[in-house]
Image (cartoon, rainbow, N blue to C red; front, side, top):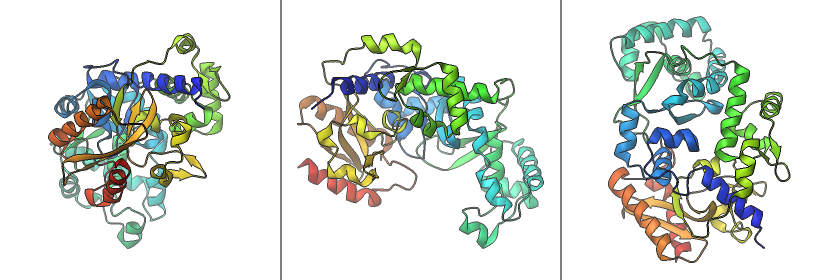
Length: 395
């Protein structure tokens, strides 16, 4: 049996994520500021985030990147997101405490902090001459960087240069630029970031934690403490302190909502008309809370296509790109470059509006992107089993 509250929650989350068309034709930076940062893993996530919320073309998104209106940088959990210029300093501070994992690994290989500090200084000197690709930086810094040998290769660290580049990005001293201007690839040049976005930031660590929690609940509340903690990767003490500072209100069970959003939520009505949107597999609607079950009608949860991402009986992640209607997951899709078409299936009867939504996204991917890989290692060959499974289910 369908729960009216569940339907309302789904539609509300979709509304907060601007997947209801309320931000049509908005600028890329405004979309990300209001609906939340777009997770980036060298896939089409950021492009589909902007398309599904505001109809933004790839050209417009790339232009916003070139003009530094939006930028990909390490932030929450130390993960990379595309964020608006208004959040550059805040986002960097949110990720500052997560940048030391590789340095700890390197320390076990004999790499010292002094060595990395010296390499960072050499990188800054080299980039003073202009943007460079990693091989050019390596040549310009000479003996300042070194190979970490076979042992380093086993741990994913072939040289010390990435350690310096990562640290300098976290501190806002340098930024990376996609070599072909696109967000769905992993080749970069590096350049000095002047002025450093962190230069005038005066937020304390505690203030950063509180503000990050506030943004989270603005983007995807109501949510639980556990869901917030997954997104921020803060420890339990800091998470509880941030929640206490926000004075959140309980909504249902362990779900929490900002007090200033309570009235809007209570008066919110589920739209009567369907509104189909195709999103990426790491869209904020599903990724921020990682509770896919709550976005499904109960009968759809047992669909075999969803079981590959089930953990301990819980559905947490999307196995493919998604089709949503007012917050409900109603289908899955993948792009097949060999046929230049979308392979898809739906959990509801197909209709003209749904088919139009698929056709619009198919044209966008075909004419503007060329492919729709989920992440850097995704390829047409690796996703072929998923494509075939979707086609079979679609029949």
